Length: 164
Image 1: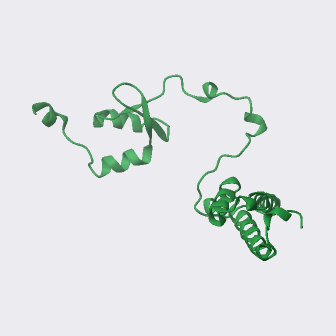
Image 2: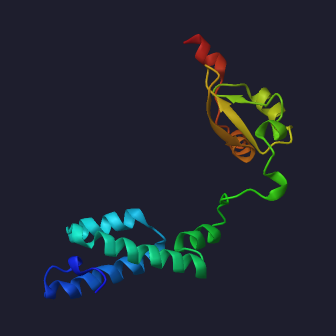
Image 3: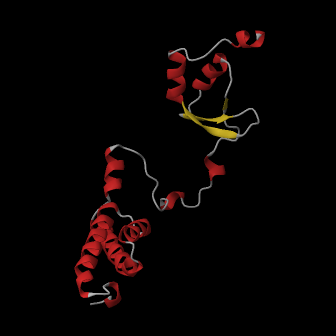
C-alpha cells in the first residue's frame, strides 16, 4: 500500500512482501545495509523493489542494533578478537600517537643476526615493526613469534650465503 509502484500487477504483491521480509530478516541478522540491498536487488532483477528493500533493511538494522549485537560481533567476541570502538575513552580522546610512542622504536629487518634478536627480546615490548632494506615499514612481528622462530631454528648461517 505504501509503495504501489513496487508491485506493477496484483500477483507481484506477494513476491514483494517475500523479498522485503527476506531482506529485513537478513539485515537484522547480519546488520548489512547497502550491500544487502544491492544483493537483493540483483537477485530480484527489478529496480522497483529497491526502495522497499532499503526501507525494510534500514528498519530491521536499526531495531536490531537497539536490541542486541550482530551475529559477527558475537563471533568476534567468542573468538576473543579485539575490536576498535567507534569512539575513544574520554581520558584518551586528545592523546596523540607521538605522546605514547617511544622516540626511537626498536625495529627488526628482514635479515638480521640471532644476537640482535636476543637483544630485541630483552626489551619490554610485545611487538616490533619490521622494515625492509629501504627502511619502509612492511609489517609487525609479535615477540612470541620471534621466540617460536628461534626455538624451532628457523634461521640460516649468513656466512654460507656470502660464499655463493
